[in-house]
Length: 159
Image (tube, rainbow, N blue to C red; front, side, top):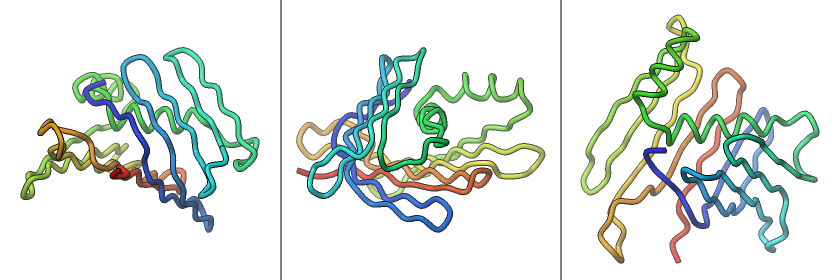
């Protein structure tokens, strides 16, 4: 991965006519993708774990037909190296475009996946400086999947 994410995030999601808001603890790095979705009272609603080989997903909230592999792919499209993604996606006829924009103290990166001119997905990442250590950190990820009809935004929860 070219970026990593670890910490409590606020999630706002929509799929079809359904809306979801909650907190999710995310660990996304070179070794794993781990997510725990919690209710407002801290009750676990869903857990996802991916170690690079297998996806483990448990939830009483999501339907049995929910494919956790889509969430893993979303994070790969958002955080993996652009050149590697472009090469692999080109092999299956998918274009992968990246645009960056500097706005005040933030860096906005937009990644678009399309096939034959039709937009499949759009990922917008906003990075900025960490107030405590001055390093760069990921502030939010907005993922819109036009093919499957869902979107969500993860936003860093400030302590």
